[in-house]
Length: 370
Ligand code: 13P
Ligand code: SF4
Image 1 (cartoon, rainbow, N blue to C red):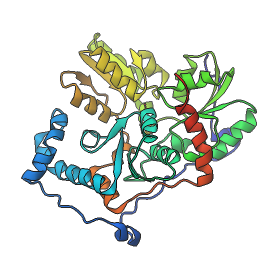
Image 2: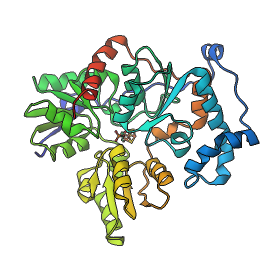
Image 3: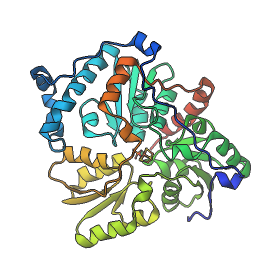
Image 4: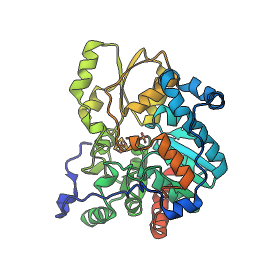
């Protein structure tokens, strides 16, 4: 069912507001120094080469040999520190290959990471992704220490809406259930009925057995869901700054150059992009589609590091990359992950009252039967 109107902060007389996600502490604070472990050697030695050779095997198609001696000492140091700290590293599919294959223990899309975080045994979780993902880990693990290597790693969707906006939407549409994309802050999750990700959005909306549902904050994901269901969707004006830049024209030009090319897109893309795609799905569903269908040439309409990670696994695949980087995901680097483990920075905290409310909406999504 087409969406008739999309709401935003201006509909409630509010100036457009933006939530900040915190500051990186460039200097080492006294508290960090007190709990710091010694800085390991970052030299490229035969021992480092031996210890990381099996990891280089995984990325040799996408990381030139000449670059490995600069990365491998960090990778070895991080993997050693993980054991010392009893820490686990979770990485989203958009992390660069040296992180995704070199230091991550668990990789995946937002839903997989949220599910996996509930099974973690280690005391410390280092989230290599953006701030809302680390907050989700904290919501599900209030007693663990959750670290993000750079807390400025935000998300244009998460910063497009606040908990106060959700309360205003509820006043405007009394009784209408509210679904929040996981790309939202904890205070938004605390105000909604259930969360969703791009891999289960239609299922979540239909699970509410309501003829109308408020779905926020991604207007394009909402339009995609609206095209797949009879439920009437009330949407919010948020957009992903990475996916909204793709255009249908761009994809038509790839198709004109090679009519056999396969185009797969993330549902955060605008409708004219989705209309050109042969398949639309979450990052994990896009990867599975490539693994199962083994196209000769594929256009992956999403963040470019994911294409690198797929290329590392499937060297014969020809990937056409209309390359859009997520500047927030790219704030996470090997040196910052190392600092994160040495100084236990930057700790993600969420008000306990918000955690309890937000956990209900995240767990309701995780526990939803297929
Ligand atoms: P996925 O849930 O598909 O991994 O998407 C998360 C995201 O931020 C995409 O931009
Ligand atoms: Fe947010 Fe878009 Fe970056 Fe995903 S790619 S984290 S939705 S800004």
